[in-house]
Length: 159
Image (cartoon, rainbow, N blue to C red; front, side, top):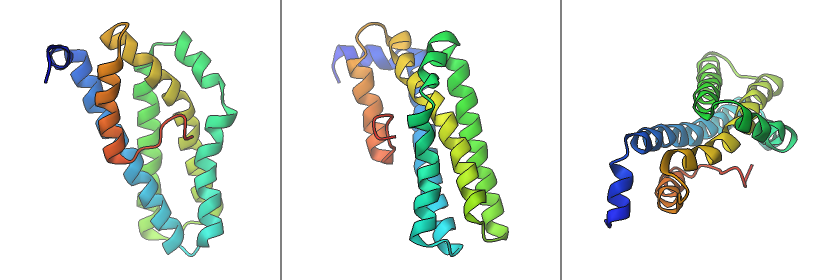
């Protein structure tokens, strides 16, 4: 580890951000897996699964206002509130899936809400890193990408 990497890890705000992003990345990945299994086990088939997964992806393309909001409001507030929304939606989906088979509109609606939150989360997340580490976020970005790649999280370019 070189001096630049050590300095990065000595920054409390980067350590907090890294921890939060790691939890969020794994939550997003496992949430998507859980929704996939819930759809397939619930008898929705591959077409139903495609509709449900598309419902979580479409808002990122449609709600381009997320970047504008990310530039106008405090990014920490956006990241915390959107992570809360995404986590709550996934937990509600999991709880409901344990008791009954969910229909396409139920799963797709919840995933659409999750996707809307992600449409605000992704641009705020991108803009947050330079606020934390300054004008050269390359090392910080590569460190965060290790976690994202390990968790197989989609990035805003894949949304």
